[in-house]
Length: 385
Image (cartoon, rainbow, N blue to C red; front, top):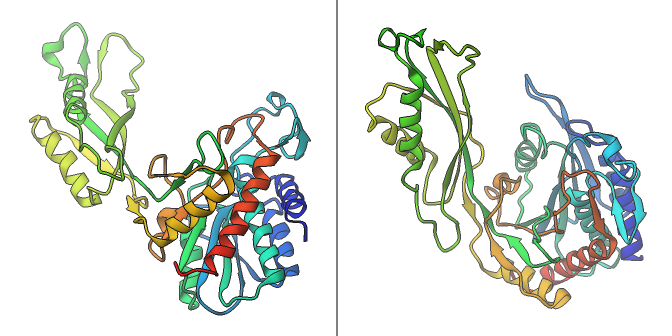
C-alpha cells in the first residue's frame, strides 16, 4: 500500500466528519471500516453517565500475542466558532498552499490518520509476533467522563493488557519531532469564598466588607511559590482565574465574594498534600473562609526515560535529524488515564493552529508523522523495549 496516500485519504475523510464534542459525526465509523478491512477486530462502544452526553468510542486490535503496543487519540474536535472567519469550509478538508485545512487537522485527526495508516501498512507485512491496538475516544475535548477512562476500564475488565502506549497529541513545538511528552502536571481547581455583612458604602462601620479579606487570602496563596520544580517538571503554579462579587451597586458593601483558581502541580505533590498546603496558607491569614475543590481526575505523572523513550527518540532522530526534547509541559491529556495501565508517551504534529479558525497542517508534516509512526512500529517489534 501507499502509506502517504492512505494517510491523506483517511485524514481528509475524518476532517469531513463534523465531530464536535460530543457528536461523533461518523468519524469513528470511517476509522473502524478502514481498520476492519486491514484485519483489525473493532468495537464501537458508547459510554454514559447521568448529567453528561453519551459518547462513542472505538477499540481496535490486531494480533493476540505480546508485546501489545497501543495508540491512543481522539476524533472529537472543538467548535468552529464563526464559520465566516474561515477561508474554507471547516469540515471541507480542503488542500491549499501545501496544507490540509479544517477543524481537527492539527488536533488531532491527522495524528489518528497517520497512525492508523502506519498500522494498516504494518498489518499487510506483519511477520513478527505481537499486537497493535487503537484506543480512540470522542470525549477528549469535552468533560472526559465517557471517553478514554471508561474505555480503559472496559478493556482491562475483558482481559486486555497493554505493554506500551503512544498518544498522538500534537506535541511538537516548532518542528516535527522536536518535542515528546513523557509526563504531565496535575490540575486542581478550587473556589474560595469570603463572607461579610452587607451595608451602606457611606457607613462602613456598620458593615463588614469581605473583599479586603479575600484579597489578603489570595495574596497568601500566591506570594510564596509552591515549589521550585524538579529535573523533569517546571514549578507548580497557582493562577487566579476569576474574582466575582455580583454587586452592581456603587453604594453597597457586599455580603459575600468569591475567587476561583487553578493549580498546575508537579509530582512533588499528592492531591491531599496540595489541598492541605492551600488550607494552611489560608489559615495563617486568620480570616474566616470557605474553600471547596472541584473533582480532580488529573494527577501529575511521569514516564521515566528508558527503552521506550529511547526507541521513539531514536526513530525521530533518524527521520528528522533532530533529537527530541523530553517535556512535561502543557495542559492535561488522556495520557493521565493511560499511565495507570502502562508506560505512555505523547508525540505528534505541531499544534500551532489547533482550536483556531483556519486550523491547518502542512501535508509534508502529516506524511512525515506517518513515516515516523511506521518506523516506531517496526522498531518496537524488532528490538526489546
